[in-house]
Image (cartoon, rainbow, N blue to C red; front, side, top):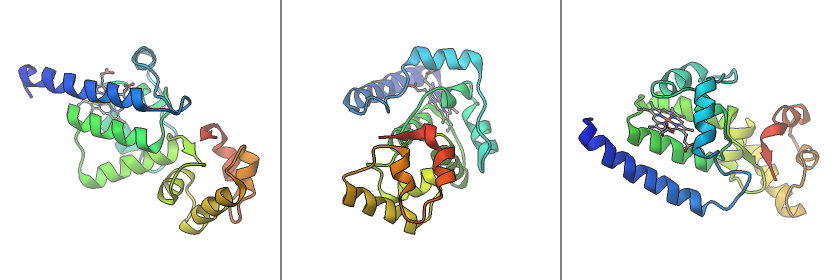
Length: 172
Ligand code: HEC
């Protein structure tokens, strides 16, 4: 892309993204503002171990530091917006590689909005099967939602140790 076409595209995308940010209501889930991302970029960053780490690192550090991914928190939906935005900026990967990147980011970085996620997002972020994801939905309907990680541990079939390991990423 020439500079002449890049800047208008960039401005439009940044505008759309700014509008989406304004409409986000969950205070915990709001992405860090740009200065935080810039600071993270200066510091670099390390991705957690997990399947898909290598391809994510390679694809997502082509234009900026990997610190952009690690220094802020986002829900699955907000990560999907980022993926779209990065593609519009020119991030490239095969379909199979994008699948791996999405899976990696959901499993390793995304917030776990246990009271709102639909089953497929619960599976992707918590690494549980369909049955446990269904049990999470049933539990929250029957009990008016989860308030703490201890509530989540009460779900039938869930591994409490796994819940503890992912504790920092839960939002209630
Ligand atoms: C073709 C270049 C390019 C690639 C490749 C790329 N990005 Fe970006 N990214 C940008 C630009 C441009 C910005 C916005 C300007 C800035 O913040 O420096 C940005 C910003 C970001 C931000 C900060 C957004 C914000 O508003 O705080 C995140 C998070 C991010 N990128 C994630 C990713 C992920 C995940 C990947 C891999 C799938 C990726 N980027 C690959 C160009 C790229």
